[in-house]
Image 1 (spheres, helix red, strand yellow):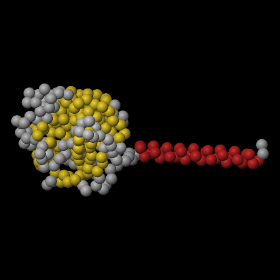
Image 2 (tube, helix red, strand yellow):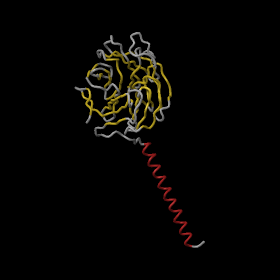
Image 3 (tube, rainbow, N blue to C red):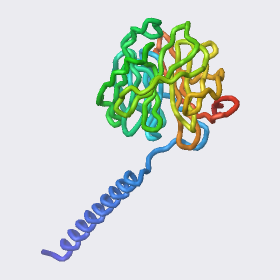
Image 4 (cartoon, one colour):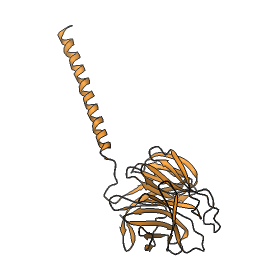
Length: 280
């Protein structure tokens, strides 16, 4: 073989080897990043994220693992990145309400019956989904949620389901379940009446936060034992979530007949005196 051909082939194979090493190194770096827990994060600056698209029914709740945002639009469950770009969405039964994240799963409060009926007639459940692909993993009956399951939060290994309320009742309730959804206790929240009960719930920064409808909308704040800490004329009825940096994620939405329903989240700072303040 002529010498120049050998040199040409040697350079070619050396280039292939170099590219292979670069590819392997990049793969190892990516694996190290995943294994070390590095992931996308919300900016430390004030932010607002709009969920891509519109949906047939209005937003019921949001939650986040701080790598993705999960949105419950009553009959559509949506996963987006932190910029609001849709990564996955699935149709779900009416009425999927508020949701929470725990250990790689989404837990959604679901009522297949009536809400706010003094005689009950709700059909309350918690549906469970895999955060990776939104595959349904299971269903748990929560029929003790007498007026309809509408919201859910997780704290200290237990799940707490909240929901509807007839006009004649002047307190709200949180229904505590263990990790296997065995019912443990009905907690009374001495909140006074809130229109249609509680719509959204999260435990964050040593407090329970509950979003309620009304004119004006109401945010209830309690301690871990459901003792009232504040009742504020603030709207987080479409979703509220705690962030690991001490802030909150507060949802809002809009519907119109022509275009359907949209949703967005905005960062907020907890406030002892005011409940929370949206960041701008």
